Every structure is written in C-alpha cells, then in structure tokens.
Length: 179
Image 1 (cartoon, rainbow, N blue to C red):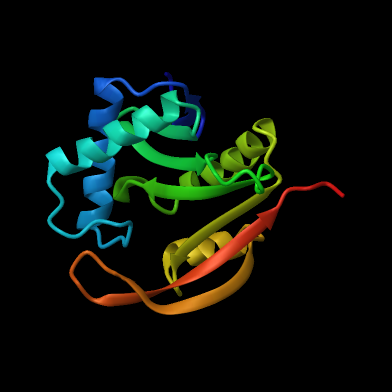
Image 2 (cartoon, helix red, strand yellow; image 1 turned 180 degrees about the horizontal axis):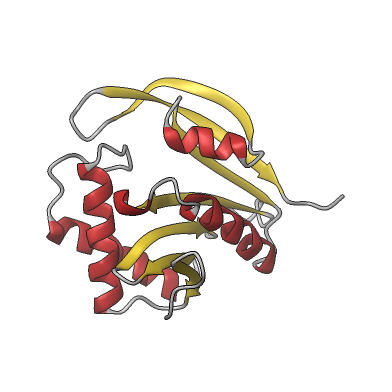
C-alpha cells in the first residue's frame, strides 16, 4: 500500500497474515513501552503481543471483529478494532477497542483518521452506536472529546498503567444514527 499525501493510509483488512501480525505486535509493544494502558503490563514480550494479534485474527476471520490498519513507509503505524460479537439484544452496537498509534506518528492525525474510519466501518456493518473507554484525562480521552464523543462517566482505579500505577477510565459513546 502506498502512503497518501499525508504519508500514511488506512485500510480495513479481512485477514491478518504473519507479516501483518508482526507489524501489529511491534505497534502494540511500542504503545505499551510508551506507557499506554491497553490491557498489557510492561515489559510486553513480542511473543505475547503476537499471540494477542493471532487471537484477533481468528476473531476477524469469524466475523466477530472489524480491523483497520494505518500504514506508512515504515510499516504499521496505527490500528483500531470494532468488536461486533455482542449479545443478540445489541445488534445495533459495537465496541471500539485497541485504538493504537505508534509513538513516531502521534499528533499527526492518524488517531483522528482511524476513529473516523471506524465510524464509517461501523455504519457499513449496520452499527449505529459505538462505545469505548480511555484513560481518564489521557491523550486518547482528549482526542475522543475533540471528535465529539459523549462522555458517559468515569471509573476510578479501573486498570493499571504498564508500570503498575492505577488509572481511571472514562467511558464514551457515539450515536451514528442520522435521526
């Protein structure tokens, strides 16, 4: 994939091969090393990161997730997932998960573009309500608020940063219903 005029492109993938898994694992390790609270503790081994993405690959192939990947000339520089496999009384909803941007590409619009692409993908998948969570007061929370996501509430000490310090989480939602 050739980067666009801003130096990167985003595409929805239907499968994750070994090369994609390796690039996504490198991205995940970079984010954890950078202090992102994204379910993993530091140090995150490459093997553990690859195992995570292999699990995502199986969920993707089963139609339970949609995965978007941002790539620049150096490789994978961002990703976001939509979790589509939700209870039968929530066919209109998806959870946004693992929105990751490599430290080399932060503050260049990759995160905002990934989120806009995730919203468009959700509509393509028949989903009109999106839900996500982010570290309270963190960079991602500010991004979501700047993009117009609605803050639903905070939970203190919800998770840990990779170094073991506690952090709160803020839940957000986005109603994509044009009504």
